[in-house]
Structures are given as C-alpha cells and as structure tokens.
Length: 421
Image 1 (cartoon, one colour):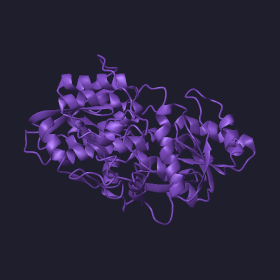
Image 2 (cartoon, one colour):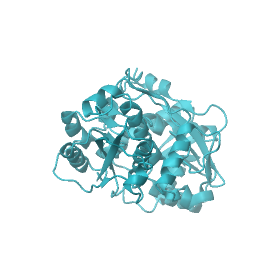
Image 3 (cartoon, helix red, strand yellow):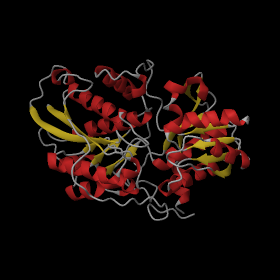
Image 4 (cartoon, helix red, strand yellow):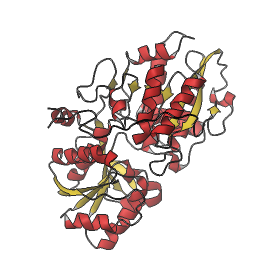
C-alpha cells in the first residue's frame, strides 16, 4: 500500500486569502484575571513577546471555545513563572471557524500585528488557510493541531500533541481489546474526511478486527437511526464514531432504540461529552493522545498534568466543560513554546530565532503525550513534521474514561511506516 501525504489522501484544501478577521482580542490575563495576577506579581521588564492563538469558536461543527481558555491559561502560567527571561507574552485571539478563508484572515492579522508565532492553533480542515500567509511571513506554528497535510509537512509546523493518523487508528485497537470483532465506521459524508476513514480502516486491520463498512451522515443530521440500521445490516457488533461530539448522544439513542447489542467506541468524541452523558457511555472503548485532563491530579501524576491543573485553576477555568482533550492538546503548544523560547538570549526572541530554536528542540511531555523530536524528520516519510504516534487506550466505567490494562499507551508508528511501503 502506497501512502502519500496529499494526493492519495485526498485532503488538500484550497485556501483563498481574504481580508479581516472574525474576532480577536489582546489579553494579558485569563478568565478576567488582571495583568498583575497573570504574572504572579512579578514585574516583567523585558520587551513583550506577541503571539496569537487561532481556534474555531463559532463553527457548525468541531467548535472548541475551550482552546482560547486553555492556551490563555498556559500563556498566563508562563508569565506567572517569570515570562520568557523577563519578557511578558501577550496573546491575541482570532476565530477561524474551521474555515480556510477565515484561517487565512487570522494569519494575516498575526502578520499585521507583529505576532512572532501562532501558539496552539487549531482549525481542522480549515487549517490549510494558515499556510500561504505564515510561510510567506516565516512565522512558526507552535503546537498546531495537525489536521491537514500542511501541518504534517511544512517546515513552519511544529505539532506535538498527536498525529491525526494515530488519533483515528488508535480507537479500533481499544475496541478490539474490549471485544469488538466487526466494526462499522461512521462520520461526515464530506469527501474531505475520506483520509480519516482510511486511517480508521487501517487501525481496524492493525487490531486484527474485521471492517464491516462505512455508514456516513450529513453534517446537519439529527436522526442517526439510518446509521445504526446500516451498521446492523453490515453485521457489525461495534460502531466507531469519527465525530463530532454532537453525534454521540443521538448515536446512543439510535443504538438503544434498535434493540441490538451494539457497542459505541471512537475518538475523544466519546470522552468529551462525558460531563453530560456520564454513565450512558459506560462500556464505550476509545483512544486519545493523552490521559483525561483534570483539575485534581493524583500525587503521582505527571508533572505537566499538575502544571495544567495549576494554570487552569489560577485563571478560574474550572467548569468541567473546559476540560476537553483538544484544549489540553493545544495547551501543550504553550509548553513547547516556553521550552524553545527559553533557549534564546533575553530580549532576542523573534520569529527567526524562535524558528531556529524549535528546530533544535526535543519535546518529551512524559506521561501525557508521546515525544516530538524536531531535530530530525519523522520515520514516517509522508509526515516529516510529526513523530508522535502515541495513543492512550481507555474505556468508560462509571461515567469516567479509565485506562485499559495491558500495553498502554501504544505507539502506532510501525503501522504508518508499513502503509508507506
């Protein structure tokens, strides 16, 4: 099977550069915090460092307002710890709406305002819109959510949280471990999602389960009875949802009313709705690039999970709805930024020096994500900017996602190395 980074995957999104931006704001403190609170009372006298976060806040699907908050909390945390060698980080925000045109407008705004990086940006299929602008301006994308081929290949992309390939191929491994024998995949009928269906099918084969078929739905679908009935007709014992989060509840209802014993599994679209659905999701297997974010980490929890909890609580982002995995993924981008920027002499952090520093960085968030090594290309040739193929396998018990026993997390690098042959 030959795997190419763009054409064969069919996820090349054409970006049209427009003008203006949906929304933006300069914030020195998060959650209503004052500037002095955001720096812990320390006076940051160095030249300010301007960065942007761009996320889909108002979008028909895959809207993540939590990304604004978690990235803000991460930036405020850096400032509380003394900034970057005495320089305060100033964060601006722009809503890209999961739209390539709006993403391009956000990138244009970053250039105009003198931002030296986009930190923790995420735009799903809209992400292609960033690149014509940021590549021309030579602005690094730090901790970007790697959802489009440019995220995987551009020398200005520095993704750390996960690879989309493993993100989609991981759940079948958890589902097979929990007894799934024949799996139907379901998600949007949009052709842009074809690569993700392909990754899921590869994961099913890797897990030694049987692929039953696909059951796609329109973006505005509210009744998922046809999806479930198609899965039943395909002889499936499990359904894997590729999202969005909003599809999880109606899928559960359709499964329940079908009278069939079908298990629902999938991506973070299973765990993110847990605050609302709780025990209704018991028995659902899933895989995610991180342990679930929490504001109450155990004493032996990884150091970065404790820092995340401290940052979120310091900015009063304590609503359970804030604790989504995609937000935590983008928060990790702020930690990569801090690590790289702190290797640069005081007062010398520019887009050029940051780019150089990032290319000398090995980011290893032990216990919360796989390692990302930007000093060398990824072993997967189609995705030279990504080396993190690690996924955590989980199942919902008593309304909470818990780690499965056995090998966990799993590294799926070999799966995708094999697909490129």
